[in-house]
Image 1 (cartoon, rainbow, N blue to C red):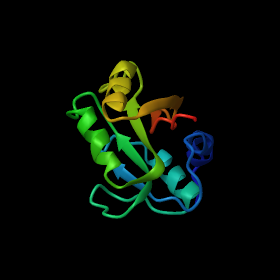
Image 2: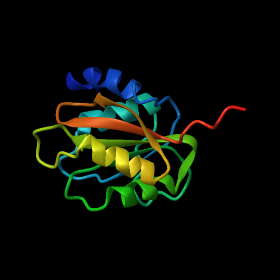
Image 3: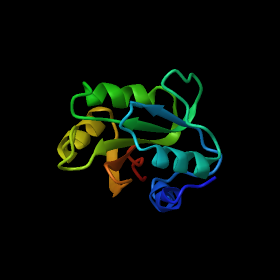
Length: 141
């Protein structure tokens, strides 16, 4: 059963590169996450989000991250553990002006340190911005 907020979430979820059948592992779940956004991911992929203890291959990783959560580089590296080749990490951070906001430069630095790069940010939902982290494209010959 869809709630009125759920259809509005679908376009932003689709812009994250997720597709039907993908397995998405989630880190950083807490009481402040946007459940409608989470449900929209599950609706799109047709699979439930896997938790931090998931031990198999994930097509994408979702990290809810707030300024005081610790070391973002460590979180991104943890996300890489089960990530399939060609998969992406989606870091959700509170929007500017909200408690826990993370500067874009901190995301860029964490991505670079982990061997990734940012591939755009979107307005994910009311309180969160999503930034996609991906492996650099291989050098053309």
